[in-house]
Image 1: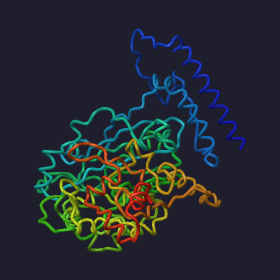
Image 2 (image 1 turned 45 degrees about the vertical axis):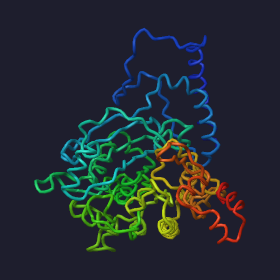
Image 3 (image 1 turned 180 degrees about the horizontal axis):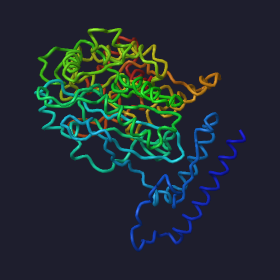
Image 4 (image 1 turned 90 degrees about the horizontal axis):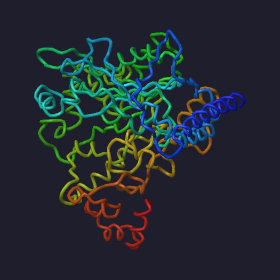
Amino acid sequence: MTAIRMVSTVLLLVLMQSGALCARRFRGGRNPQPRRSSPPPTYRADRGDTTESFPLDFTAVEENMDNFMTQVKNLAQSLYPCSAQKLDYDMKLNFLENTSVTCNDGSPAGYYLKESRGSRRWLIFLEGGWYCFNKENCDSRYETMRRLMSSTKWPQTKTGTGILSPLPEENPHWWNANMVFIPYCSSDVWSGATAKTEQSGYAFMGSLIIQEVVKDLLNKGLDNAKVLLLAGSSAGGTGVLLNVDHVAELLEGLGHTGIQVRGLSDSGWFLDNKQYHCTDCVDTISCAPTETIKRGIKYWGGVVPERCRQTHEGEEWNCFFGYRVFPSIKSPVFVVQWLFDEAQLTVDNIQLTGQPVQEGQWRYIQNLGIELRNTLKDVPAMFAPACLSHEVITRNYWIDVQVKGTSLPRALHCWDRSLNDNRNNKAPPKGCPVHLIDSCPWPHCNPTCPTIRDQFTGQEMNVIQFLMHMGFDVQKMAQQQGMDPSKLLGMLSSGS
């Protein structure tokens, strides 16, 4: 408690001093133009910084973090107009030191980094973006989505959003972490370990890229980390499940046993279910998920977690599906998954555009929600809203979606606290849920789901309009449930 008061007092004095400087600078209501632009501050290890630097370790007050972070957020938000003038929030591009680990086309792989001096928390994010599984559809991908196979046109900076945002109002609990964004340029669900060959025409090195980024970051402060959160969305979310233990083992093997490695998988928990109707396996959209992965893992030289490989020897493709690989993962992992994932429905050949869905499609969609619930029931830390969407943790609306009254940032914070309490042999915090799954049975029956727009008019649709657009018969459903149609409409509107 004394340490918290001391750190709070120091931080308050520092921010008040910054606020006073800011107030003097902006007094009079206008922002005076500088005579010339100042060069950005440089940081060197061999001498002291010439700019103001306050290396506060926020991890020192985790036991009472809620109250402390509320004070920090209020102060930071009140001073935001000032701090925005002198802080650079962008992540900057770095290429790997090991130039033999490359993107698909042989161009250098890399990552974007925004350091947060004084923080011992690191967040490494794996980008998503489907995959290709043979020479033909990889050639097509290279022509139409080259950014996902080459680094030749990557921008020098990138602005973080959602859980990568440095703004406390958008990212309440991770805004002060060291942020790392790894662009997806391997097309292999972050699993490959194969150099470019004449036969394939491409390198598939997703798994190696992650390892090399971690090694490079050890020289940039990761060696002093307390927590490393490996996060990702879509193919990046599956990549987290495939690589989180590899990262933990790599750090342990290099002697960094004090770093707690955790995973956050967003929209990467796919099912190997039967498609609504089967089609020829031409590309990643038309092909059944199991078939694309079976072909892809051979083409990529894919690497899966060792324990999962032993369980599914000869059928390692099973390890790309969340509910099959999860039991073999040793590191703590938090799973975020829409119950009606758009990408899952796409590969299942359910098209939600144009005409209202048929009754058979409607039953298929509802059964998908039931199947996903069943595969998630034994996952201790998860957040599964009954929404039709795909990806969430890097969206600016990620703080708005709730399950049973708890937001995703809040659930992640509760998970952080529960892991810390477990390590310290303390009882888990009360009123801080980490296993959150919607029980309502229809897509978008949760009123906090992201806005849906009509694909033709662009107009926003509420949940009733959306369900009717999909062919939902309110009269028929009310009759089946033995209730008045107006009562059912009221329940739908409230998310009941």
